[in-house]
Amino acid sequence: GQNIDQPTEMTATEGAIVQINCTYQTSGFNGLFWYQQHAGEAPTFLSYNVLDGLEEKGRFSSFLSRSKGYSYLLLKELQMKDSASYLCAVRAVTGGSYIPTFGRGTSLIVHP
Amino acid sequence: DGGITQSPKYLFRKEGQNVTLSCEQNLNHDAMYWYRQDPGQGLRLIYYSQIVNDFQKGDIAEGYSVSREKKESFPLTVTSAQKNPTAFYLCASSKEAGGRSREQFFGPGTRLTVL
Image 1: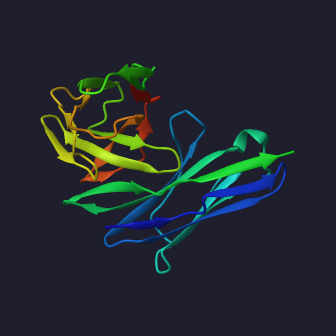
Image 2: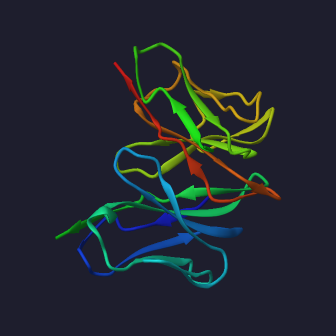
C-alpha cells in the first residue's frame, strides 16, 4: 500500500509565496503529480516529477526527492484565484500497472 | 473540442435503487478511471480500465460495477449494495505508455445524493 501525507489546510497572503509539502511511502515509485481543484470542480493537472529536482512552470514549481519520499509545490506571486485544494498523487505499481494514488489534498486559502 | 464529459451533474436516488453514471471521452485515451471524493478526503479509486473490454478493481470497488465496451465510454453503476453512496464521483482518462498512466484529465463530476 501507499501512505501519502499533506497538510490539511494552509493560509497565505496575496502576492506572497507558499510551499505545500507532500511526503509519501511506497514501493515501486514511478512519478508524482500535482493537481489543483477548485471547490465543486474537477481537478486539473499542474505538474509531474519523476526524477529528483525542480520543475518550473510559470508561477508554479514542483520539487521531488525520491530518497526522502518528499515533494513540494511552490506557488509564487499568489493570487486570490489560487485559493483551491492541491492534490498530491503518487504513481506506483498496482497489480502490474502504474496507477496514481491521491493524498487527501491541501486546502489553500489566499487572503488579501 | 476534445474533452471528457459526465452526466448528470446532480443525481438523486432512493435507497435500494441502482443508478448508472455516464462518462464519455473523445481524447482517444486508452485508460479511464472512476474516483469517489468525500468531504475532507482525497480521491479514492473505484475502478480503472486500461483497454477496451478489460477493467480492474480499485481500492473501494465493493457495491460498484463498470463496463468498457467502447474506448470512449466507461459507465459506472452504483448498486444497492453500496452502503454509503452519497458522494462526488469523478471520471478521468489518460494516455498510457507501457502500463504507465500519464497525467489524468477529469470530467466535471456527478454529485450523487441518496435520499
